[in-house]
Structures are given as C-alpha cells and as structure tokens.
Image (tube, rainbow, N blue to C red; front, side, top):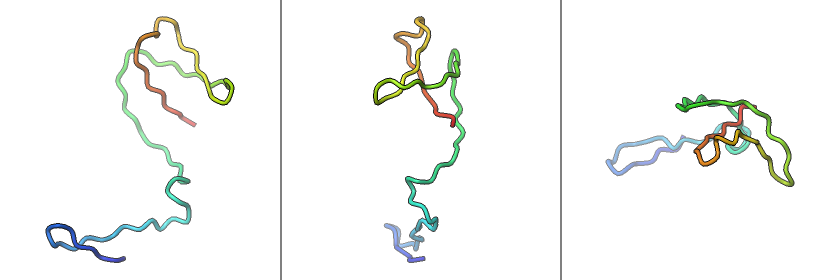
Length: 70
C-alpha cells in the first residue's frame, strides 16, 4: 500500500477499497440504539413514485425516526 505523511511527519497507510464492488453497492446491516416512547412496525405502501407509512393521529406533531430493516 502507498504510504503518505500526515502533518506530524509520521507515515500513515493510504487505505484502498479491496472489495470488487464499489462502496455504494455494499449492503451490510448496522446496529442502532434508539430511545423513544413507542414503537410500531409497519410495511411501506406505494404512493405515486414514493412510499408512505400511516401513523396514529396522536403522533402528529411529534418527531419520529424511520429505520429500514430489510
């Protein structure tokens, strides 16, 4: 691997992607830890050229986080 020097004149390795796929094509799962009040698991429904999830009316005005799980 090529070596480069950083600002402290120490040698550092230039990391190269050795995978055959580009970085944007690699799909791996990550773990999230989220704190909240309630959780609902739903499927996304088609809506024009987008997707839609209906949530309970008492959630209106509150912040939510959406995580795609598959």
